[in-house]
Image (cartoon, rainbow, N blue to C red; front, top):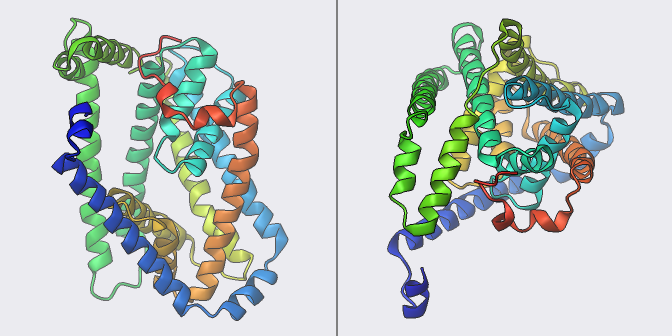
Length: 353
């Protein structure tokens, strides 16, 4: 990297990645611009002013409750490493989302792992491994939800493209989750003998960096854990189901605020469709994927663009409020200031405490 700077020649791969990011941003801005151009703003402001506050408040409550359940589920996964209060894990989770809000770089898993490791004297990479397991469990439940939607939900899709797309996405997700589980299991087993694919990759790095990466790979394996108690295993799966139910209810409450009520399975279909749109938008570096995806998904069920945009704004505003309030509280509980979130370099993967 120093040689690149000295010679003034940029790495071709880095240059292509930069152009890819710019292209994604241009596409995102273009989609939002087109949406704004189509909207009747006078009608939108009229609809927003007519919002029923009790349902807006219900949206805020379910968004918050979803993260409380997520923190409680994370606590069950962390039990083999250390028993940690749900309130602290909730604070760390919301602080991670706050970091994403301030620096939209996908730092949430790293920030919440760092906060917990810092406070509980654990290796950050071990905590990060429990976050990976948490995400995989969520992935299994989400894939099951998509299968239910494909089999039972009535989606206005005369050509069958959406149903086919969801089926392909569900199969792809299942295969990806299976591969991830195999890789984690193999790394856990092989690390007991000083081997494993992460350790092998670490050893190929130069000098001191290899030692640090190897240490991180070993402690990451220490965090690949699962509680021995059967009841904990069951409640982890149950918690993921509850999380998806609460996530699906966000658009329910936001819709009721504007007198929009859909069939029960429609909300799970919205969650499934929107979930994959957001994943694709993030992969393509297209901003505002949630906004565009939600309006598109709602339009399939007959919700006009103006009302759909009002619903999306309600979900986003209540989510930002919850993240701002509880994320700030989470930072305070962990004794961390906003300035520390601006320096990702301080977050060391192989930190032992």
